[in-house]
Image (tube, rainbow, N blue to C red; front, top):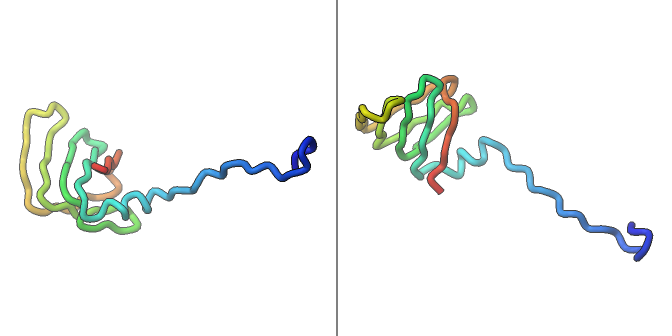
Length: 89
C-alpha cells in the first residue's frame, strides 16, 4: 500500500516467456538457425524436441561467407550445435 494514498500500488509484472514456447509458436513458420560452426539454415520449422533437435523443410543452407547456397527438401538439425534461432515473425 502506498503511504500517501492508502491504495495498493500496481506494478507491472513482466510475463514470463519460456524459450521452448517461442520455438513452439514458430512451428509451421520460417525460421533461421545459426549453428556453432557458422553455417546458417533457413526453412519452415516442422517440429522439435526437448533437446531442440529440429526438423526443417524447404531449407536453404549457407556457409559462413554467404557464398555457397544449398537447397534441401527436409533436414534434421542437432540441437546441441545450435547457436541461435531467429523466428521470422
